[in-house]
Image 1 (cartoon, one colour):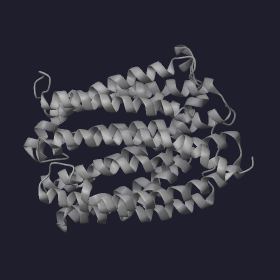
Image 2 (spheres, helix red, strand yellow; image 1 turned 135 degrees about the vertical axis):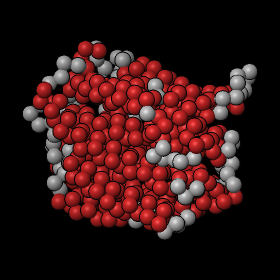
Image 3 (cartoon, one colour; image 1 turned 90 degrees about the horizontal axis):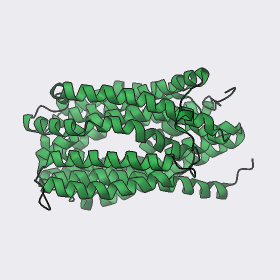
Image 4 (cartoon, helix red, strand yellow; image 1 turned 90 degrees about the vertical axis):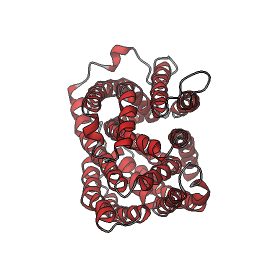
Length: 450
């Protein structure tokens, strides 16, 4: 196929824009949740931040499973094999139901022990436990909604997740407002109200995803039984591909929570500032990382068709787009850091830290996005998940996590400087991933003979 940049850019925008909007809505929702809780005080904000770490670990392990199976969905879409796409979705349902059940049991039976990893403040821990226990049903609900959302993206029906996330955005804000602050005759529930709001949004998400999935206009529409009855060869290949991505996301997400464990020990104010800055930056981050999602979809489709020359040109184009997006979005983040730091109800010291943390995030955005594109987009699209897992996990656990604790507990750096030291790891990872990309060993068709 002829490589037409104009047509490709048009298709890229068509796919990436709805994904970006969905990401911005999701990240804004997280920020709004934090702003609402932040009006109650720094302890409440820190508690929701700590409690959210457990859900982040679950979500990213879930994302690892789905990212590994999305390789097959995208490549099957290249050959228009909807029957096998349904089987991949059904396998994901089953696997994530098991994961959700395990997480539900763990966080309800060992809540205090798990939270002790992230904070030593008894007031923060008590409120975080309340948040986690109420919201724990979300582990089970996401086993239904998440595979369907990934399937919509892999089959290029990206407007559906965007629509669903927009509805959830406004629903969650309304429920949070009523329950956190006790409006319209409801009791003032604070952190518990935020948890109920989040759980309610997950229920709405399941209902809407199911509605769009099981209607005839849907690309992969089929009877419920067609999602099961899996082929043994297909399942073995999915497990082989998804196991490294799942391990990768677990170690990555657990590494992120270790940064929280390190920074929270500087002070509650320092961690509250980190939580505030992180929720703001996620708005920019999710928008930028839509390019990575689009890369997996588009590159996976072309690999499924077997067009290797077009795939290589496409991947180079995606890298240029990611570096440009990283530079632009990083610059915007830095320029707006001062005004954005005043959104939260923090002390003057907390606002100062929030501004500096946003500057650090913005300055390293291009490297962050490049690494994300390579790992979650290009390498996974070609099934090169084992190398992605090893390179990212080793860089985080042997470089970034030790630096976070050394900077916080040994060097006693302020939180923004500790974060800057920690993020130097990204440039080492970028060099490793570039070498792998240039070798072309990631260019594989994983659906051959299925």
